[in-house]
Image (cartoon, rainbow, N blue to C red; front, top):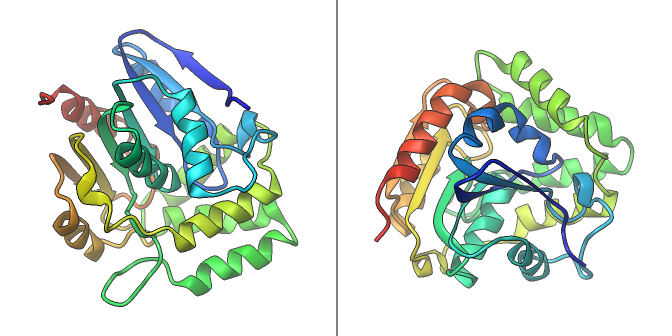
Length: 258
């Protein structure tokens, strides 16, 4: 079972992986600028967007990772946001020939809060899992509100994300549950030093899902080759600060690769 992809533009391949509950529509505002320089390959994660009916069994990190690897060309810059960043890190570890450069946006090798490791409280993920059984739309709205929390443009950011993703099919309920399980259980910290590709990391200082105090810890596990913190952004800096985000992304991609 192969994933559908959307390819536009020309140049070096740039793969875009979205976050939980959403789809590749989140990247649409950036495409006009990105496609001027890159062959942009947007991929809906298994069970999401146009791939809502395409997901592995069992739905696990390894099986999802292999589906993505089959859809990605060799030597690509792979950009992952949030859950997409977790999967992008796994790809860089296990398929190094696929990932020429790794770009992580509001992502971490371990999302859940643990001893001496800041992150999302397990109770928050459990709450979303319970709420999914009743109303996906309301649950997604609550999740989007958390992603934009603290940003001066929070309402505008949520409206933009909603408008972009509404053009695609809703995610499969099972994929939503499995995605939350990945966020709550995957811990790549011990494997992170195996990554050989240059890493660019982008964060929002106001992010409540990847808190600012986690950045130094992440860097201590595996340092970045390019790092930028958007001072007035939350969990989706490419939505709240699209121009600055693209500028920093291009600067990171222009840096030489050994």
